[in-house]
Image (cartoon, rainbow, N blue to C red; front, side):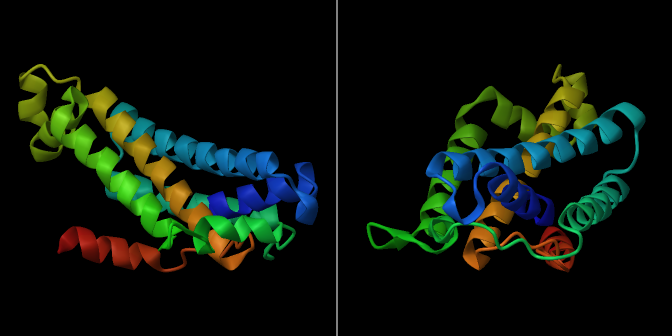
Length: 188
């Protein structure tokens, strides 16, 4: 989340004109943040599928690397040179609903469709349930795992952009201690 937040803010500040950035530059900044996090997810997936590093270790290590990179890119300070209109993503409303709620509904709908109506969704369920049984059934486990980790990175980046938009700043400390919430959610 912090890496996406800082990436968006840096692109808007350095390439988009800062407080005077156009909507197109804000979209470009958001895309850069999502792509950066997608690459982090792809790296996670590659380390897990190609080199057999345990997922827990890989994702915790990536979290530390991403936080370090965010701190390094931002020189340890929040980047507030974003236009006020950037706050619309995380703080605005459309048709009386907060934009993050609309985004959540759209993402839930897409996830439900993918997981219940596509071959990829069935493959994700089978790999998550028992990777060895999925492999024996003809599922290409490594590409599915790689795709899932990449999608997780993209969605984490999207979450970072929404949070960054709520704050109106690129914060290198965004998401601090969220890992405990995630671990608790997974265990429960």
